[in-house]
Length: 96
Picture 1: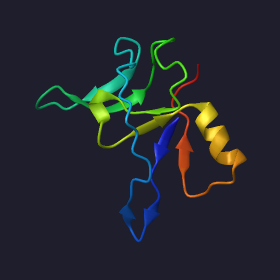
Picture 2: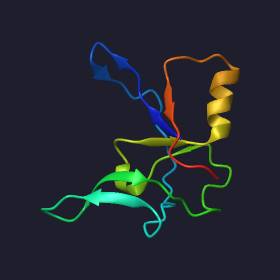
Picture 3: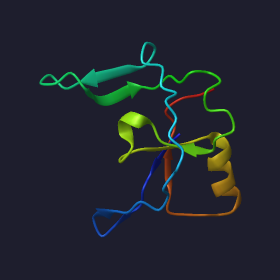
């Protein structure tokens, strides 16, 4: 799951700062677009992670998106929902 920060008065605020960086993205199986001018990844269209890399880590960031994207597991999403927390948006980007 990709976790989006809430928007307040047209500004994004990060409410969660994960400390774990996982290099779990399978670049060969994922689909992404690159910038023409430098060849770096601009956007990931389809995420594929190495099967056993995430393990029990509930929230993490990828090295290529350290400042912009937070990833969570389905267990984390369920914990948020079970405790009636609001203000977070989740978007499914992969399945185990």
